[in-house]
Length: 118
Image (tube, rainbow, N blue to C red; front, side):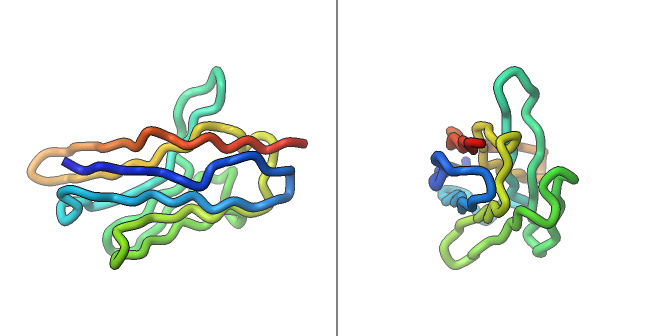
């Protein structure tokens, strides 16, 4: 099992910045990729950014050039640096971890709320 704990959400004005953190514990050796998803009111959960164990990254088009995902392997922590925030970035942000073998499993954090005021 993998446990994920997010932190860093809050209220920020449009144009501002926030950094989210996700600390992983448990069977972290088995994690192949980690990512951030978000869910706005009335909308489906969507991928924001992901990073593989090899360091490869992937971003949603809506956040490219504004958000940066990174990882600190020594601290078992993944970060999401969010710059130039927009009101449409308002959502609950969830940390996700994936294990591919021997079977595909996903683990989720409890979520952290990001509110961007206009």
